[in-house]
Amino acid sequence: MSETVRIAVPNKGRLRAPAIELLQAAGLSFEATDRALSVRVNNADIDLLFVRTEDVPELVADGVADLGITGVDLLAESGADLPVLLELSFGRCRLAAAVPNGSELDSIEDFAGKRIATAHPRVTSRFFADKGIDVTVVPLRGSVEVATKLGVADGIVDLVSTGSTLRVNGLREVGTLLESQAILVSGGRGNGAVDRIATAIGSVVAARRKRYLLLNAPLEAVDTIAALIPGLTAPTVMPLAGGEMCAIHSVVDADDVWHLLPRLEEAGGQGILVLPIEQLIP
Image (cartoon, rainbow, N blue to C red):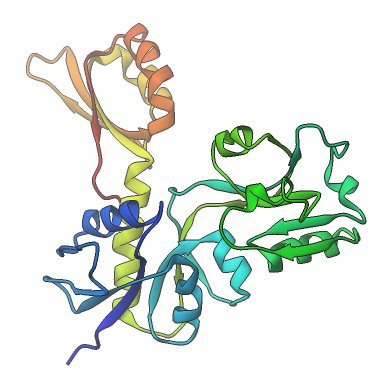
């Protein structure tokens, strides 16, 4: 009998929806309601545990869950020593230091002797200690941005995505402590099922960074086009009826498509198609 694998998933916040979408794209069949605390996957021996994102590292470390989706910042704040199996490429943000617009502080070094309010006291304390900068860390929950207005602190350390929340609250960034994104963590316990799940999830993450590109081209243009789109190993080239044209298929980086298309056209490419890839194991 196979052992049930438990995956801890954020129950709310900015990581919940993309985490659910990722698991479903990896082939797991389930329905998640807002109030569900756990969900059984229909097509695999897997239970999804919907918990607070900040609790994921502890639950995985304690063996309650075998895998978990959380943020780099939350793993660092938890202090848990967990293997990071995958970077999931969503939930990107940074843990940044910020001060009021009128503050004289302009750099990380200027915080020496100052008070810093944050919901990440462990990471903040370690960061400044490693730099030899003496600060007083004020742990806060909730709206850290108001700490300077209340006179609680001289500056803050908080998660920043676009920076709009800081601007609305009259704050400006002066430095970055940590770059963060969603990650898949493991308890490090040997389990073939866990490895297979990680492979399936990783195939979706890898596919999202790639595109499948197809085009027709004259035979004399093959070498030029092949140099532009080498693919995972080499492009696939297939002759078309008539003998003067061929079809070329390749996998390319999604970020490169915008400047590849005009170059392929200039090289003689015709009927160019760019398609999304659902899953990819390089």
